[in-house]
Image (cartoon, rainbow, N blue to C red; front, side, top):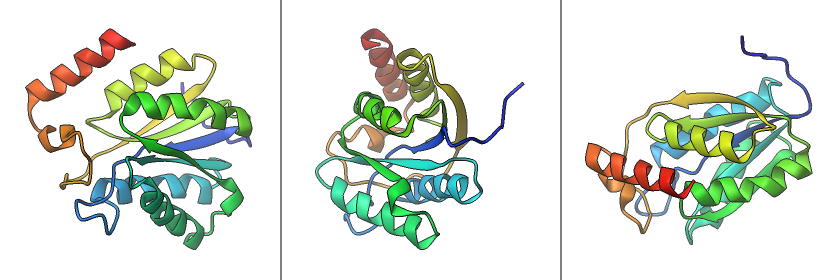
Length: 171
């Protein structure tokens, strides 16, 4: 049975789903995940929110996510960023110091269905002392501003299998 008790030691992680391909706004997935993460703080289910931001354009992504959060009533001192990630490994690695700063014992993880198995596997292996609550969403994909192009091929089973196999070999 899942413990849904809210304490000051519950933090929300919103993974990066990039900017739209022209760099002017969040992608649909990024906007949806940001909205879901903000709701956890507004509803008192988490005390802090961590936004992962990607690639060389991370500052723009951070600015847009922070604006959404602050405009929704989240205090700026409760907002943290993992800057310039390139892949899930970077997100997990960047998370460690922020979890220490916030004293997190429970992490609500907002992640897209396609991303969820890899994220779950990596987080549970890296942070066995943390209790996780995965909030999985699904949204329409649109082209994003990202140099690896892995997201451009997300509908292909072979690409998904190859990427997840590689992640298993490294972790």
